[in-house]
Image (cartoon, rainbow, N blue to C red; front, side):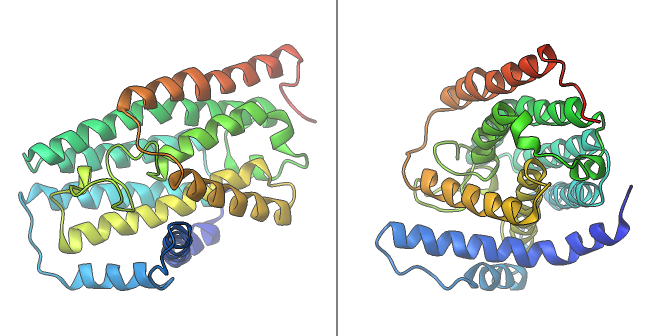
Length: 288
């Protein structure tokens, strides 16, 4: 059942939750590196400064592509939290990142071009695993609707442990953390040029950052589905997962794009496929 209230709550609350999540991320990262770090609310200050800056774009089409990126992130997240069709959610989510890639290409800058190429590699790397996750949930619940998956009165994680591990791997890509921060990173710890966002500034860059916050809340909501039968355990799983991502980000250096593709397809996708194969073989295609 589609819940309009949940979609509205997501649209209103996600920027605050996403900003706080990145503020905590920066604080923990700084402590891991022996620094005091910025205030937890620093991401909000940075976003406000970006919106106040002069509107400067390399080409006018950049504004259109950035708007498309933000709108489709909002659509995918709203559909997800409203309990909509998972396949439609994934389609809108992928389309959003295609807009980001087109925005980078439209600047005709060699740095943005390289960033756009790497963003495309990342889409190719994580997309199969996200689709496998949706298929796995369908095999267990016999539904692609998020509302039906959440309503499952059984621990989904017990049926899809391989799919969950595979999703964790591609989550590192989606959160733009090392060793998979190929196209850009939320922490400028490995580059002076910001990859796919190099030629965005001011309000346009602010909208991209805002889309990242919405996207992060959506991805953490995806983790929730695996533990939805128990709210306390689901919240604990989300916290542990995000802390693990921060630890990985501060432990590993960036790898080459070839490693991203190989690890995503050979490890993450294989974990998912083996899990789905066992599930099908054991005849656990649905739970009554």
